[in-house]
Length: 205
Image (cartoon, rainbow, N blue to C red):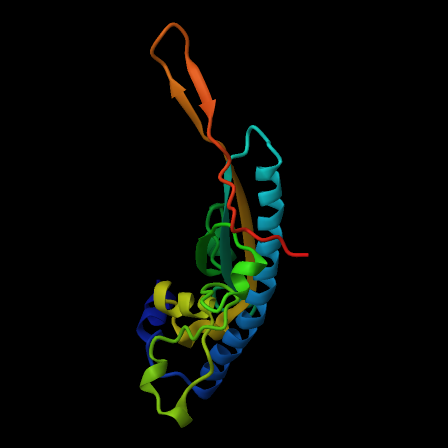
């Protein structure tokens, strides 16, 4: 408990030069990581679109859920090695988990990403809400979408970003099926939804 109180008290204090650099390095790494994730999501979307278009009677649509988990370094006070007594006997407790970022992605194609107004994972948009407040010579490096999610939406303090030592990415594809049912009359009537085929979806070569 004392460690948690100490964490709360210092999380918004001024960053040391080392902590500032760790946050900058995390953003730089996430920019490249987002590009890889985006390529994977496009690949999955194309595969799912082909299945929807194949006439599969059970598949009318899909969603892609992405959860990114950030874990503490092995030498962190809250690492697995340093907190075994804390979580012992509680299999649902994960003391090393610092935070999670979750998002739902619909269909996304290479053509979508190539558009000038594309916004999201792997884009080239400036996600630092305060970027315009800086003088031109003081402007910081561009913030990527996930980095913005961390400090602005999940409220994970930049002061503690250097504690991150392990990142996992879970991509869950939800196969969806819709059926309209009419239960009045002599017998039930069930009609499967038309597949939600997106005419604008362009498959990459």
